[in-house]
Image (cartoon, rainbow, N blue to C red; front, side, top):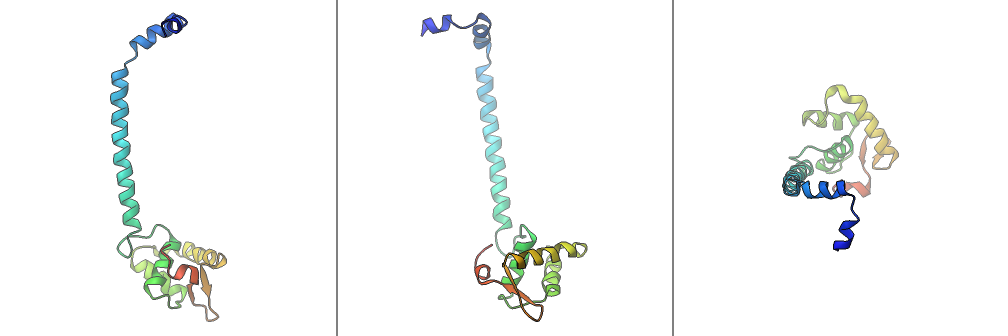
Length: 131
């Protein structure tokens, strides 16, 4: 081992001897604690968002699915679904175009079934699952 240290460039050896190893280790430990704290907050937020009726859905499709599931997956008109989302604070009235876009996309992806009378219900795959 002593022979290999002789091959170091003198400046590298000086730098290695003066490297603040204890300070670096302390900073790494501090960052690991901060990372653990942030992960805990993230996990708490995700859990709250997915916690059922009390938690706010994470997306418009999730909100639409929740409204329909809570209604026993009874067919509903888009306006009824939208009104329920607005009432719960999951959709602002000015965001109607995004709501209808989500309904359209969910229908194309077969998450929703559109009935002949214009009402929608969840497809069998999504009727009982948790998003």
